[in-house]
Every structure is written in C-alpha cells, then in structure tokens.
Length: 79
Image 1: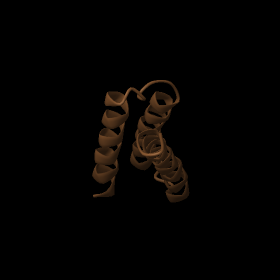
Image 2 (image 1 turned 90 degrees about the horizontal axis):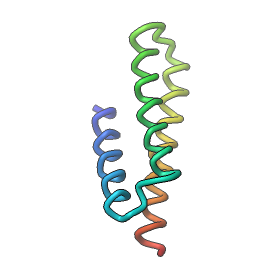
Image 3 (image 1 turned 90 degrees about the vertical axis):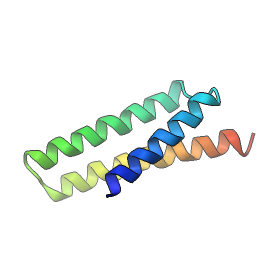
Image 4 (image 1 turned 30 degrees about the horizontal axis):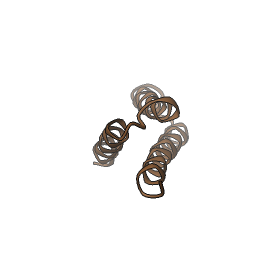
C-alpha cells in the first residue's frame, strides 16, 4: 500500500539525514510537517472523507517527502 511505502521512504531519508548530521533545522520541520499532514489525511478520511481534501493533503505530504529526498541528494551527492 502506498502509505506504507511513503513511510518507509520517510524513515530511510530521515535516518540518513540524521546520521549525516543534516537532520535538524529545516529538514526536521519538513519531516514533522509530513507526519502532521499524514495524520490530517487520516482524520479527514475517517470523518468527512472528501476526496479532493484528501488529495490536496496527500499532495502536500508528497511534496514534503520529495523536498526531504532532494535535500538528502544535495547534501550527500552534490557536496
């Protein structure tokens, strides 16, 4: 299921950033924003279940995960 795959990616990237000394600051804020958005997505799904709301929240969470992946790539590969 997609949610589990995203969570595994978040865990891997967050761990890599933390071990590489880049886990604080903006990266930590983005990671927590991802977690908060996924919780919000679940709450919307369990209550009002409006598909467009869920899609918007999911899209924002995906952008946060992409940002973390880009930060990891930039930090580990380009520096």
